Image 1 (tube, each protein chain N blue to C red):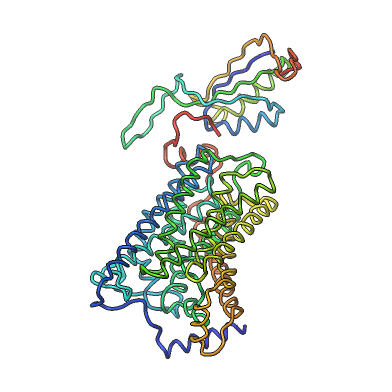
Image 2 (image 1 turned 90 degrees about the vertical axis):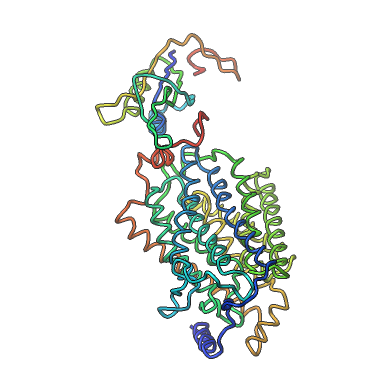
Amino acid sequence: MKLIIAIIREVQLDRVREDLIKAEITRITVSRVSGHGQQRIEEMYRGQRIIPDLIPKIKIEIAVNDSFVDTTVDTILKSAKTNGEEGRVGDGKIFIMPLEECIRIRTGERGGKAI
Amino acid sequence: MRPFRRVSLLVLLFLFFPVKSLFASDGVPIDSGATAWMLTSTALVLLMIPGLAMFYGGLVRSKNVMGTIMHSFVAMGIITVLWATIGYSMSFGSNILGGIIGWNKDYFLLKGIDTNVLAAGVPEYVFSMFQGKFAIITPALIAGAFAERVSFKAYCFFIALWSILVYNPLCHWVWASDGFLYNLGARGAIDFAGGTVVHISAGVSGLVAALYLGSRRGFPYQVIRPNNLVITMLGAGLLWVGWFGFNAGSSVSSGLSTARALTATQLSAATGALSWVIIEGIRQGKATALGFASGILAGLVAVTPAAGVVRPYGAMILGALASMVCYTGIQMKNKLGYDDSLDAFGIHGIGGIAGAILLTFFIRPSWMAEAVNASGGSWTIWNQLGVQALAVSVSIVFAAVMTFLIIFCLDKVIKLKSTEKDEMAGLDRAYHGERGYGMLNPS
């Protein structure tokens, strides 16, 4: 089992989510986060240029069985990338972590079948 | 064809017997009581626009909240300027082009009304600004039908054109003393505060625009939920308060008719709201806050044309009926599957039509007696029903056809519908470079 964490652009959320659903990956957690990576953006505030320290992003967390890791990652890669094949700084990152245990609270089931 | 012949005869009659005009020349003393109330009403109607911004703003997703609020606010800018420049003249000037529209060169830029006082003892500046607020809120209402998917720039042009080509002519027909709907039948089509001019026209135009633009991305499979029902409720409250200016101010006086309109407004809103939550309670088992707000609006919309002629019991029945009809209408919308996003047609269109037609059955006897006198023979509620139905049909057809033409032509120059990219990013980011909330979870 793996925990896939993807940090993506806010504007790509709809597309990523639609594509994940198409790939039959429906159990996800989404949160609004802010952070700092390579990307620098300029915003206008009252006519003045400002460069925010922290940029708003979307974090998606998906726990999957090993056989689903590739599908999930490929789907996110495809749908979160902007600017065609090129991609742009700020498209985000995907982290994959080993997942020690997964327990469904309602039934107490453990492991792969609880995901 | 019969009613039309009758109308033309009546119009001829009025050519020979000039109608007593609302307007008077200089020298009329100012009635400070009436003027004070009209000043208050003018402010109250303006309050409805931030109210509408909050009502609509709360109902969209968080990425569209500023864009939706701006739909209402920008109307305050655009329409005010247009109204003072040509709108007031087109609406309340004398008939030109065979009565399609009015014009009075003194009203252009409001330059010739510096010393004018209406026969009611109210300075004309106050009346023109009061009417200007109606002109602002009407196109802003339409925005609810195509919320979350319209380009800001195109929207600005749309409401400007709509105001000139739809609102001003309708306003002239219904409210100007030489307008043809004002003079229809014995005592005119009854539209006290804008059932046809404001609500039917906005609702029908919204429906046409929503159908033309198509639905939002993901509709109806993706569940689209309100970002903040709290501001929606506050907005509904402000609309209710502002509606006293809208309806009671439409008496252009401070007296009995004002009091009647005020009472009818309060009662219809209350029964509308109660009926809606009772219907919901029976059908879904829970009374929602949004349902209560929708009921308030349904009741207010329905009583808008009626406030001057119905008695309190009539206003209550009207409010209850409006909620039933609008609730049914919204259920039908869900079945038919078109995306009137915030139910501009469902509440304003359907509620406005219901109010303008059904008010006929609750007209106070003194009004009917005067209508009988004015017609010089008999005038029954069925005669009046015909007049109301004609006025409603004229508004529906005119608003629908003109809105279609405006959108069709405008769309060739500036795309009205947001691009898919802008729609996904949200109106706030795409058109305003802002966000409404700091770090709330996405919705």
